[in-house]
Each structure stands twice: as C-alpha cells, then as structure tokens.
Image 1 (spheres, helix red, strand yellow):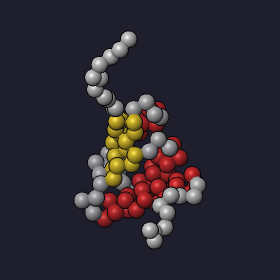
Image 2 (cartoon, helix red, strand yellow; image 1 turned 45 degrees about the horizontal axis):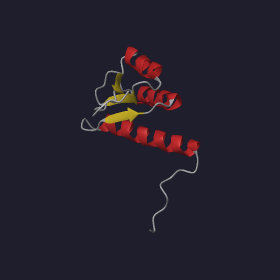
Image 3 (tube, one colour; image 1 turned 45 degrees about the vertical axis):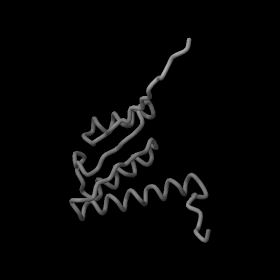
Length: 103
C-alpha cells in the first residue's frame, strides 16, 4: 500500500523503539502539565530503563502523570516493587462473564 511495514525486524529493535517512545513521552511530561504516560510492559529491562529515564529527567516516583501497568499474574514482583518504591503501579484484573458452567 506504499507504506513501510510497522513490524520491527527483531525483538531488540522492538525494545529499542518502545524505549524511544517512552523517552519521548517522559521528556514531554517535563515540558507540559497536560501530558501523561502509561508505561505498560512486563519486560524488566524496559522498566529499569524507564526508571533510569525518570530519574535523569528529575521526575518524582509519585508524579501522577507517570503510571506503570501490567496484567495481574505476569511479573507481579516487578509491579509490586514499583509500588513499594512509590511509583504509580496498576494491575489489570481480567474478568469474564460465565454464561453457563458445564461439569
């Protein structure tokens, strides 16, 4: 269709692009009170790189404009550690309705 493929050629390229997007958002947060970021990742290295960026930019852990989110049950230790350190950490709790149950 005349557009380059948005699919990254490797996991490393995907991680790099993700971190570039996170850095862009966090930098914009330092320049505007109306920019917010939800960092949704289960990748420990991405979380650590994000925390480094937050520190370098002088953002505080409790800044409500930066939140982390993960699906409950996936790398819960990372989310709990973020919360314990004062960051806004959220867990998505998946639910579904059961129309009927068969035993």
